Amino acid sequence: MVQDPLTLYKLIVLYILDRVNFKMTRSQLSGFILEKEYTNFMTLQQVFSDLQEAELIRADTLMNRTYFSITEEGQKTLSYFGNRIGEAIIEEIDGFLAEKNLELKNESSVTAKYYKVTGGGYEVELIAKEKEVELVNIRLSVPAEEVAEEVCDNWYKKNGEVYRYLVGELF
Image (tube, rainbow, N blue to C red):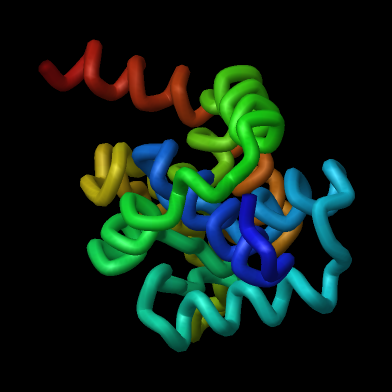
């Protein structure tokens, strides 16, 4: 087992990011770690900062959400020190990922945003990704902000159906 708690928390973050094939948001990682009461919010922010500074994880920000992925150096570090994570913690992480994988993946790979355009109205951008590949990127012009918000909300709920429909009609 790891002696330094900060090192353990860093290894936990690396382990989680290594086990998924998509970027995870700060809130997804924080939610799991804080729910299990491994550490507190402030310490976890320090962990993210330290991992980024050491270039063990990469952070990308889109629409006020930070997405994390493990770097090659992070994977090497995990391969050297990953055995220092306790078996009980690994089982909890693996169970969490098995149970929530689809939900986490969908949450991380689907984005919707809108912005006001000159001349009035709003433009909505809807994206669905698989790993780093964009499966679909749709831009729509809508007349009002309320409509833009509704389109974004519906994209999060119905993106799979919309994608299947488009593929079925176009291929």
